[in-house]
Amino acid sequence: GAGVSQTPSNKVTEKGKYVELRCDPISGHTALYWYRQSLGQGPEFLIYFQGTGAADDSGLPNDRFFAVRPEGSVSTLKIQRTERGDSAVYLCASSRGLANEQFFGPGTRLTVL
Amino acid sequence: GIQVEQSPPDLILQEGANSTLRCNFSDSVNNLQWFHQNPWGQLINLFYIPSGTKQNGRLSATTVATERYSLLYISSSQTTDSGVYFCVVRSGDTGNQFYFGTGTSLTVIP
Image 1 (spheres, chains in turn green, brown):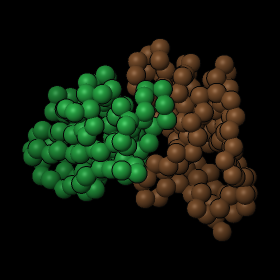
Image 2 (image 1 turned 180 degrees about the horizontal axis):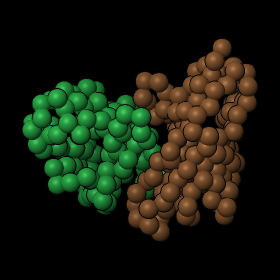
Image 3 (image 1 turned 135 degrees about the vertical axis):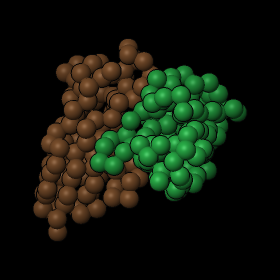
Image 4 (image 1 turned 90 degrees about the vertical axis):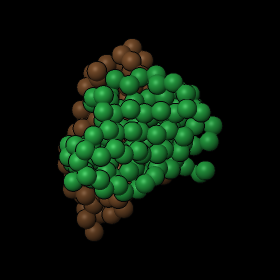
């Protein structure tokens, strides 16, 4: 595709539920990043993939958060037992490599009621 | 991690005015980008500029890596320039994370 796409654009769920957020990077980009942006704040790094492996997951807030990228392209961010504090916009970005320019998707707005 | 401070935090301009946004970072970096987050939340690439100077239309940017700062210049501002401007850096010395700056919120009034 022409750019990074994310689905769904909006997700409303209830506290305690499980959610999956999907990111489709730009074709040919080997690096993929997830960020979280809370209202009025700048994005915060969550996890970075180089190919299929998570090269750095130090930004994941706790073990309820997990992300995969099984074929080195599409990635899924998974959140278990959602809490109201998880409400935020989840942003995905991709780049040709770690040292290259990142391009961001439109984000998924997650609301936990 | 790297501390990334941007100034000013807020800026209001009359349409047509010029401005300079600054990004200071606490450690050496090998990757620096400027983004504009529009009112709909989309992050738009402005510059990939780990060092040197670049220009694109009314915008230009300079990074002085040895002194750990970058500047974004906006000339002849337009209302569509409104939004939040972020500087994002990465240091190869302290892991693979990218660090967003504190942001500058720009409002251009007609």
